[in-house]
Image 1 (tube, rainbow, N blue to C red):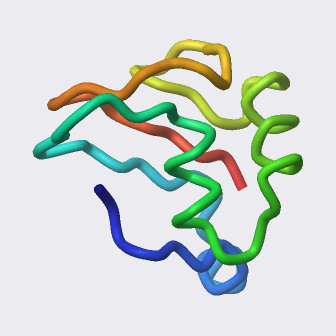
Image 2: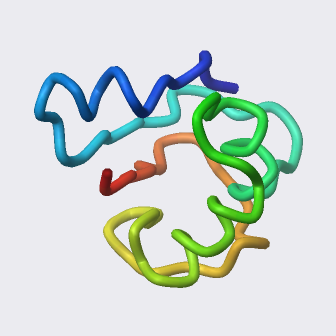
Length: 79
């Protein structure tokens, strides 16, 4: 769905929030599993914790790790 994300390199540049707009989604994908595959710096358990604390949001809303992704949605990752 999305290309690999290197959180450390964004943090080094002083970037505090990453917004990803999903242009196309084929099939049903959980946000926690997609991000675990795409974020190189964080483990799946770290991603789950960040989702639960609201540091990863979908459409500017706190979500559950099991939330499914759809076309046009925006993932926000607060570094």
